[in-house]
Image (tube, rainbow, N blue to C red; front, top):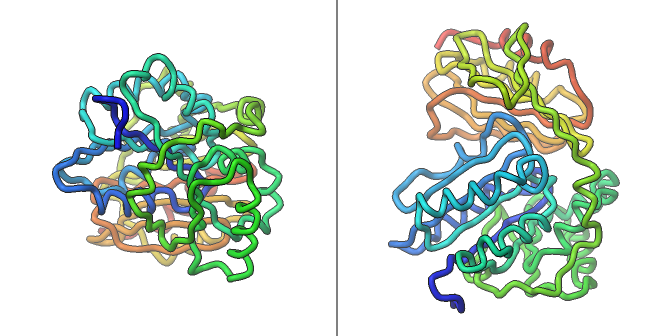
Length: 345
């Protein structure tokens, strides 16, 4: 139980791009004790913000999203302010923070345990999700942030066990079992199913980053707003509203990755199969997420590397698509191709 009177139990849910963090948080929210109020801070590397739209909206849930960078670097100055504002607004019984998949947890931990939150937050177990298939990907294994996400985790859950081979899962278990200090819990899961009791494990203060400077050295965000022929510095712009057939495009880059996101007008409607062909045909892609209007329904499109799926969602506000790649693509050409997929709603 909470040893610090009147402090808020707090957890960080980490893991590399596309590992299933948002799905895991949704599974936790489904098990939220009745009568409790929970707050969730979601951080996206991309520009337009999609994860928040995939979370439930109901009484007792307060969700805040920070898009367009990492709360451990380019948005770091906003972390303390945003957490404090979220606490004041929600007065939650629990706070969950989901950093971007290329976020280094150390700076977040330092902020949450610093003097500004010493008498406010009770930082408990940090949970890291691992897709065991990542251990065969050199670009992931060579990334120091990936290793420190595991190094700083109290709990590691091997996720997507329904998609991985048994040999891959066993290799992950063996590698994680050799880490020191040992993890408080190692487990297997499918679709991010997690027992809420794991959140209340006491944080291990002996855990240390092996690559504490990795994120600072690799991140150099530049965010611009592309509204067709006009460009404005991100921090000096007024929010542009999309018009039918004229989406707002936003780009950024950092840690060797590039992002481009589009906001489409609510009236824009797409031929899903034509749009899917475009989105699955792009190369050098780490992640694509989108909520897309198709007729009178909306679908959530999710691509991780070369795998993709889609499902209907209750979201109804607009269409938005985010692409994260290892090199800068011809965003204007991609936009033209997507617009060519439009149909009458």
